Amino acid sequence: MKKVFLLPAGEARYELYCEPSEIEHPRRFGMAGRVFGRVRAIVAAEQGRRRERRGAGSGVEGWIAKVREGLVRGMTEWVSEQRLLWHLRHEISATLVFPDDLDSERASSIMRSTLQRDIDHHRIWMVVDGVAVIVFGPLFFFVPGPNLISWYFAAKTVGHWLAFQGARQGLSRVSWSTCESRGLTAVRQALTLPATERQHRLSAVSEELQLEHLVTFLERTVTA
Image (cartoon, rainbow, N blue to C red; front, side):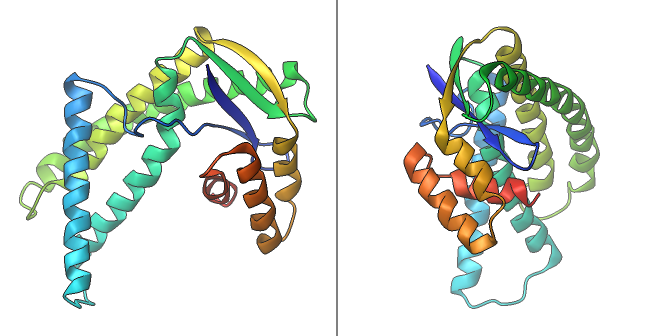
């Protein structure tokens, strides 16, 4: 049974979070598998070219190289944010771990409203990114190298579809149990501290909950 954490991300804001042990990219055959396989290959190639430029001591980069680097970084961060919903597609039961200053009914209500928000969000953006594939595909056809921009939006279109499926699965088909956590309440308290002290406290909570990437996720989410 998978654990899903209801993380405080502000005074009255929450985010659902997990750290699955599986590969972060969705395991899927067919079109989705081909798209993400192609994107992984392109990202690896771009990272290799970036290392080569640094090794050669080239300090000046053109705008195309900067755009490619930004897309690679953006895709990596975006994938990490979607992994919960991607993995929920295959779950039939899960445990919601929530701060112990909430009751289970309130925590479950927040979880369900968050999943509904995700359904609405990904439904819209898979259409928007799908249109971007159609627009940017021909537009960047003559740019040297793989059409990373077009593949970026193709991967996001597929990713939004998989996230939409995961949110719908979590809302309507997953059987949820609940579990209180004092550590998650400590997260809420830590968010009110100055930056250095906050990071130190969150690191301690991360070790307590055995969530390796918790601090990185919260710092990115809280400052977003």
